[in-house]
Image 1 (tube, rainbow over the protein chains, first blue to last red):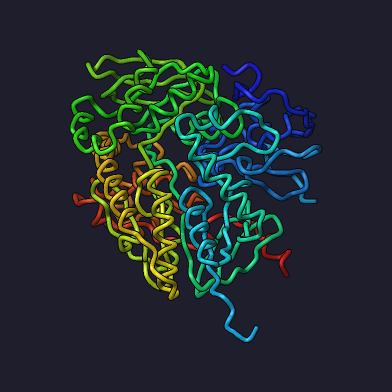
Image 2 (image 1 turned 90 degrees about the horizontal axis):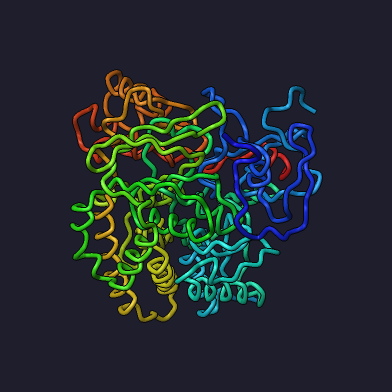
Length: 100
Length: 455
């Protein structure tokens, strides 16, 4: 079972904190984290599979598999493994219910 | 100026091959455009962390630190001096008739070229194992990128499996960084590994370094394993079920798995450019055809792991050669190539040894249970693929249409080789006869807004 997040920080821990929102809740990451790292530092998945019951947490981390596209509150999606987290980002693990 | 404008040479990819190709063109007085998906040049194996990270090159790249450092410094210097144009964080999504469609943060732009050098690299070659769609299953390359570019392990307790040099390398890198690696499972048996030995002697120091890394894994490493299934609950991976070489059943609890069997050449752009392909029996995949220098015809040149899987050292050489071929075709004086070609031949011998020692697990894929997922994008099962063969025959693109394997967002990059293996088994033919999935533009998903913003 995963207590805090999926990932374990092994190095480079002395970076500035960055705050973002995940499904409406404020979370903290480190400057230079990808969106994938930031989301999995405090969670266990990025999204739900559209074709199966299982959650997904990325696969290749090099922009090839497209498993890690996540939603933003404003609508546009982004590839979590190749986008750096920014202060105030509003990310979602599910599609927005109503389009802005 | 009244003279014709200088030829526009575009390089796709800023890994070892792309950087060497760019430097060779700059030396000849050209100003290449280098388009790369990374935030910073370096490619995957010499990938750099974002700005503000503090580990040294020795910590990041180990025995390859000097090579990585030299490539990064060379590229940064050429970019700073304005001798090349670097389009970072940009994907070429379509290519035709001298035009590339390039997707970046500002939307889709058109970039024109007279000559095109594709140095698109490779990604992990993966084979499906029941349960591999679960959260917490990653490619070996992903585990390495996470460690190198982010300083993180993708789980608290890790099992790695597959075969090839990356399996050992990633395992030892994670152990050294302090990650909890529970097991490293190699599907290649010792006797199979010995078979590649005489060719691996083409690079004795590299082979010895591999053995030393293997030794650092200690009793975590097991050769000749059978992979049964990945156990998972609603949150993701919980354990790996496998059998050791003696057939004993084992269950290793873990929350992360890294998998891979060597590399798969990234060939989608070569395909769009109309390059010819052949099925390589040893690498068990289709590779684009070129001459020894990397010429693919029609002003297209290929270099690096996207055309021949020789690793970073081979990619540097191939990048130089492709640029030399391009320059020669543009009427520049010929550059000496024979020493590079000889080195390449030696690397090729070594790579053949690797392919033989750490083979693609064809029998495992062919015996995949019906309910196992083959295509992770759309959860297409082995049964779906097999039934489509019974219904429509053993041709790759009919199977794709009927089963949707290869039609998802990764465009077959992670399922094609396994799907073709399953189709061949079902149809009673060889994978070569099944054919390969046709590439389609855009070769990366492109948000519709990226086109709209551009007007």
